[in-house]
Length: 203
Length: 203
DNA sequence: GTCTATATCCCGATAGAC
DNA sequence: GTCTATCGGGATATAGAC
Image (tube, each protein chain N blue to C red):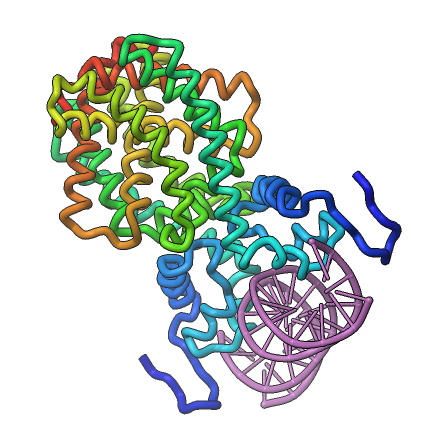
């Protein structure tokens, strides 16, 4: 990418996109709360005031990261589900995908849950969440005998299980090895199947 | 509590303990990363340099909070377990206690997992964790037919489930209502029982 | 759209007086 | 053990030039 000499003007091709990318990098290194516009600017070699031409403020940039996170999240899980016809297998596959996503896209996963973004100010985020949620609920309903309350309880249980395994994996340290990720994903998958097996005890 | 007039010397009865308490307050309001020694000092009406007479640095204070967190955590879960003889009921009770602890002691729960403390510098933390862990593993083993691998898988599954439900509850917003906490705790408890019911699928 | 420069604020940590 | 004072650093955000 073109970079003018030190001190000269810097015309970035697409500073907006570059800022989002750098934000992801930085969040991976220091967490959401440790991220700052100032350091992102420094890394890109632009003035600290430059980001304000593209984003209202720090949170506005984080919201853009969150939207990208949901896109990647959805893009990773939907195909995974499509490989299985049985509802139980589909849920297990989703859970595996969930844990893998958390492990391999830690910064994005962190933004989804820890950014504390104002959903009133950033409604795009909820919209990005919608598609995946519908597919998830459809699959859960198939295991609940048409009982909406049972479906809700099972959905919560599946989500909690996946979330919990993801958190445990991320606790072990940043950037887990692929082997450890697969072990965790497989355990998660089996826990989902065990949960479904005993689901009559849920509600 | 005695407080000298503005500008005068301030002799606190136990600044060390007061700092820990104020840290918990502040973490509840702004999260672990948003906590600062400077603001804690301001709230207590002492100079920003005063804390350094009791703690090496910011992390040293957070470590003291973490130790207190484990003490309260253990103190809440052990009696809960003691009420039940059956291993499955004990694990379900632990999980209920786990979720309640997270909901009613959010700052402490946060410190346990998000403080990112150096365990080499603060070995007390691991010691505080030990007691509870042993009791937990003993109960899990009773459900694993003497198979240590099965026990390990089940322990992970139980921990992940409790952690996941706690995270979902905390996601809903700070300071959840007692009604919501009980619903979440009950759901967690049932999920543990369902998991145990289907545990042959775990490994 | 980007830069320079600046205002304003907060933080951690230390030195030296009392 | 606490205070006053201070150093050094980093952040957000804005104003005005180009």
